[in-house]
Image 1: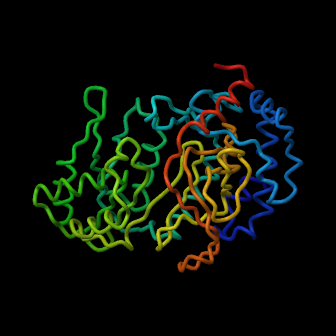
Image 2: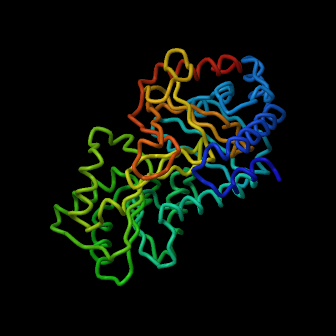
Image 3: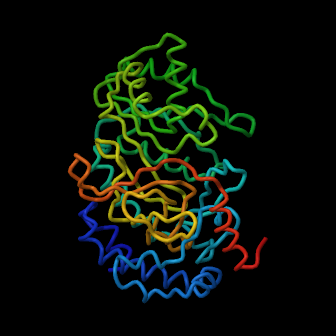
Length: 371
């Protein structure tokens, strides 16, 4: 079997030691493919003296050249012709620039079992139809963002009875319509079916506050869930902590904390991280996470804060084998979490100042001779 498919169809989704050999094999195969099919990536690997045969143990993963997500916003790298893509998506572009990431058909075939297995593990898959409120962008032919694709896809964890969107396309731009969302939630509370609320935590908070202003307080049907995806980004100044947000959701909607899930991922790293019942992002077998020193980029021990380096052999259309976000975080041993999962979990503290990331991205750009 193809190394990537062997990993992504693996059944023990949080048993990292059992998957180490498969993960390493898939990484070697992925690196070799990108070196052979993407001259720019090959140049970066040659400059750093990296070859796939250096990946002999799982501890060698840090040797893979790491590309900052900011680099993908400055340079388009593909490892196959675009006509062979299954799709091409972009990052949200809140900084004014966005990544363009190609997805190959093998990636889609590997991604599907990952999403369904993790969704089922965390109780998100249900045969009971539900109303869907999407606190995100209404799909449009001109919207190619990965977050829009993800939120739409999440509505299929249960048969959707319909979708109400918080950000609607009007006159070529997206405008929030929280009053329609509030009215829909009030209406759905009288339905015999549960409700799924999917979207940005910022818009959940704004929507709940708006419902309080309107005097709406409802109790959604049993089985209703809130699935949060994405960060606060341009609304960081209004960010509230999780306990405050969860308490407000129970007060206004009747949805308790144990029915609130939070997801993490990136268009450059589309792995389905999902919080456990203690709201920790345990690492699934489809990825590995390295925390790097912001100054030296050397790997840091468990528990120390640094830049988050995400590794997955999922994609062959775009060389995203090892990417570094502009977030600070740290890893904690899984045994420290009462949920029972032994996989380490990632805590994300927030975005770092851009100087270190910009310097790293500029170094890669200089190597390739671009501005």
